[in-house]
Every structure is written in C-alpha cells, then in structure tokens.
Length: 176
Image (cartoon, rainbow, N blue to C red; front, top):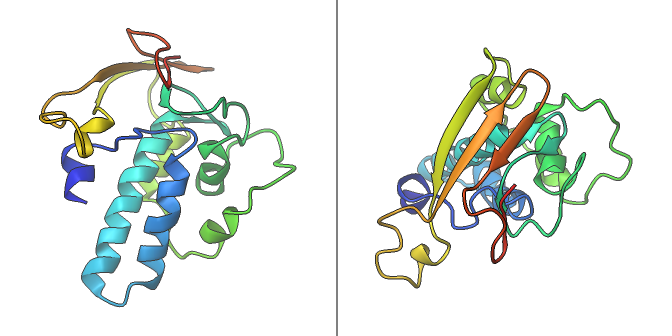
C-alpha cells in the first residue's frame, strides 16, 4: 500500500491488469478479519477505482495504458469490471467476464465522488496531466521510483475523451 500510494502502480492503469489487481484487493476488503487489513483493502480499492474512473468513459476505457493487449471498446478489459460500479454505457454487455462475480458479491462500493468522476459529472472541457512510474521501479531499477517515466495528458470534452503520451506507442505501451 505504501508503494501504491507513494510511487503508483507499475502497470499504471492497464486496461488489461487494473481489474486483476482489484480482484485481489476487493477480496482483502471482503474477507480480512483484522480491521486494519480490511481498511487497507478499502484504501487500495479506492485508489484503483479512482485511477480507473479517470479513464472510464461510458463503458469503455480511454487513454494510454501499459500492456493493454488491445482491450479496447465497450466492456473490454478494465471497462467491463468498472462498468459494474459506474454504469453509463449505452450498449448492453452480452458476455460478462467470469471475474465479475467477485465484484457483484462484494459489499465494496467506490466513494460517490469516484462515481461522479467516472460519469464525468463536472464542468467540461478539462485537461488532466498525470505522470506514471516505471514498471521496473518497483523491483529492478535503482532509483526507478524517484522520477516518473511517462507523462500523460487526458482531455475530457462534452462528448468524448482522449488520452495521449508525448512518446506515443512504444514497447508495451499504448500511447493513445
């Protein structure tokens, strides 16, 4: 949790891995007997749903992503699980993913402000500037947690959202 809040997540908002990470933390929240551990599970879920809410847009996931494996479009990748919390997709989900049961049966719900962020209930247009840590900074690269590796711009308009990286697509990063 210290690394998550101080450095960020090495997969940083991955359209593919964000909700795999959430699956573990929501179970910590659900099943921990120690109140402090339960609180850590909630803190992680609040962080991860907030990160997801920024990129969530009407059932899809809009913005750069580390290792997304082309999980784009309605309910694809993280957007599927996040749609259970945020809704707002005009298209029904015809094939829900099997991990959805983890979220449906959990009493965890994101804070109301996070739901409003996901549904873009604020004055628009808005530009969000964010920095992302290196993947290696968590365990390999000395000093990798000291400075950001990527810089992201997300533009949220009245009828669309787009996110970009100055470097564009590179390595295993979808830069748009």
